[in-house]
Length: 185
Ligand SMILES: [Mg+2]
Image 1 (cartoon, helix red, strand yellow):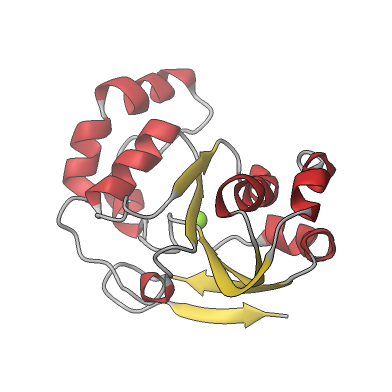
Image 2 (cartoon, helix red, strand yellow):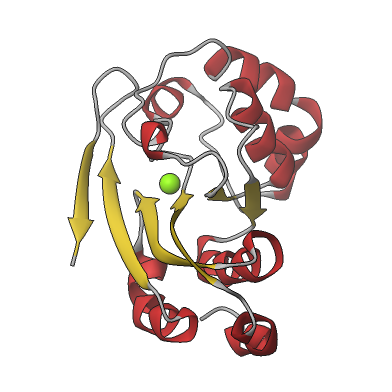
């Protein structure tokens, strides 16, 4: 685990358990495919380059989102499973950029949490349950195109939260065909 979830132990112990499913979903290549961007975009998303960070964050988000996200179609196979009250879009990268993308595809009425790196996601999920959801769901359903950090921490999370976690691997080809969604065991 990226940070120690045991800091939430006291708060977690007093949470009620509810017969509800909590949905946690990634955004990029789980809800919305990045294929078109990867094919067309010359900047190629040099993630660790500071100059690019400046362009992405300051100069360029608005245009980028307009070109690639606004009014674009995308499949509904993952979002149709969302529960209005019990869903978290948990996505990694720059906060401003991710929130602009999610707003452009009109999903910002769902709770959104942006972490900088994917490996922070399991910890942030627990933090959200303890501080925002404020109950232990009977099941957590995770949708991810890169679920490795949840696979690694699944047993620890289930044990800590005393609940069942199902991880669904989402594979998107593009935004025009439906993704395959496969439960991992
Ligand atoms: Mg992804």
